[in-house]
Length: 137
Length: 404
Image (cartoon, rainbow over all chains, first blue to last red; front, side, top):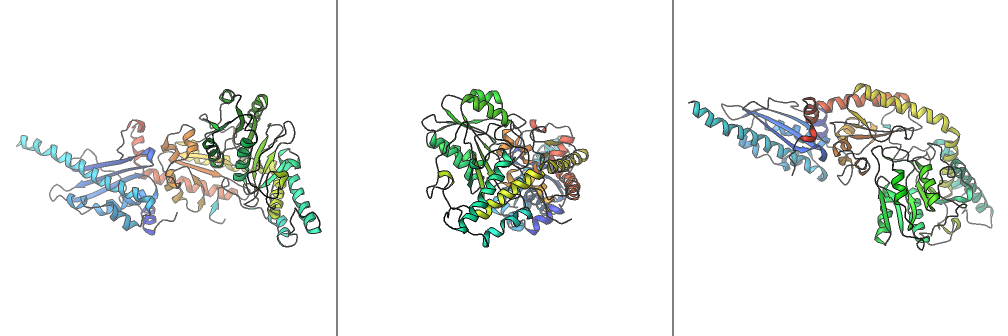
């Protein structure tokens, strides 16, 4: 199977590899997929409390080259976006950016799921946080 | 050293130039039909075919008359299994095979099941070998054929063929083996191993593609198969069709070279194989061998690199030709059924790489592949959330994963 130049570039030079402190309140962590399916993506976002903008994003992926590229690209796109803007990222955007063949579309779906899961985790943390601060006040 | 490096010798092998030299005159100069009995052109072709028949027979301890030429092992598997099923239908309708067989055997058996035959697919043990007691128990008075491969094409393990043959002989059941991965690589002897039918192909032993043979025992017992193709009644009526004379000459020459050079070649390939394994295992943790180490082809290695997915590994060593059991490398998106049959988790199957070292590989190439793999595995583990979790002490089997 031939890979597109963009997939190869992300595979050879993956962006934003690493982990953020998953216990931090402004960090959202999404982990999707399963080892037996051959793909696991962990995607994390760090949101600036003051302006609600994603100031950092990191990933780690177990999976094929297209899965690695999809998650690497996702972290690139997430940085600088608000959480709502991030939710608008669609798997089809990833497919066209990386020229993924049909057999690799599930990689982009997984990346979209990982974004949603990370944001979901971040929002759940925020929901718990607000009443706690109110009680203190 | 030239790249890409070919380490996929279970899939096919580079043709030996000596084999090509032997074949060439039979394309243009000696082009006769081996079935032409009444002129020089036919006689020369027939002579070449008979020489090849003898060369093949010598390699496997058979007689020349027991060799039937075919187009390759898929045809030989089909001819032997369907041919026996049809020929011995009055005796019974039960066939025994194993879960790790090649698709040419498995799908042939499935076809027969649709036609009313009963097939037992024996499981294999964790080392990839079948359980002989289980085989003994599986044989009934309706069993007509046991078909178990000599050596597995994915994990390289050698089945206990001599013991299987002995059991079949005792029970009066025919024994077919797909010998393609073993012939020319390890000593195969149809009499020592009690083999009644054996599939052979040229392109796995440095010969040309598109030509193979079926060994069909003629004595004790005399075995017959019903032809699966109608025509001129060539090959003692078992396989019609004008013989592929240059291909057959190539198969014969390839067998002769293997027979002459096997002792030296085995030593060399085993040394390279062991070096590759030792290098990888000394530099990387959690590298797992798939299949028995003791009962294995000398040139074969199948390893799983935990926490790293096979296709991404292949991508990182894109100047090395190997195969992976990963789903992502297959058309079906299912991981290797052979590795799953060993009881391996899908995750380990996804992480597997098959190395097949061949006649034309050098030590320099093996060193290069080992060093490159070590770098790529380390890099991909840095990328792997599973490796990170495992290092944190998380038991991955107890994690509840989020899937659709």
